[in-house]
Amino acid sequence: MLGVILFGYDIPFWIVFLVGLIILIVAWKLVKFALKILFIIALFFIILMILDYANVFNSIQNLFSGII
Image 1: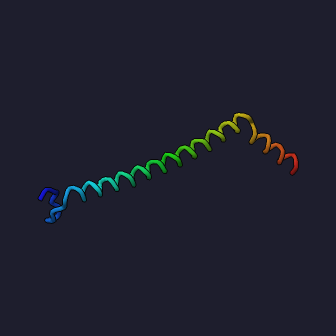
Image 2 (image 1 turned 90 degrees about the vertical axis):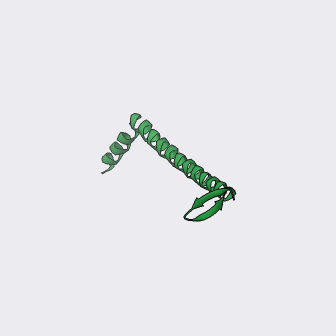
Image 3 (image 1 turned 120 degrees about the horizontal axis):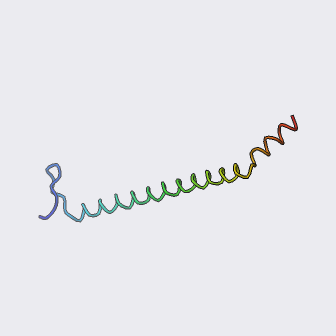
């Protein structure tokens, strides 16, 4: 029988192919999720940098210090 011998068991190629395909699909979904999270974090920091460049945080700090 054609296949792979693993721990003394003869496993057919179609099972090895199916398990490999499932592992690839799960890995691809994890990579896509990680890239989405990375994009969201990068977008958040870019927005913070733009707000800091526009002195929005200084304006808010001056507004609160004027009230107190």
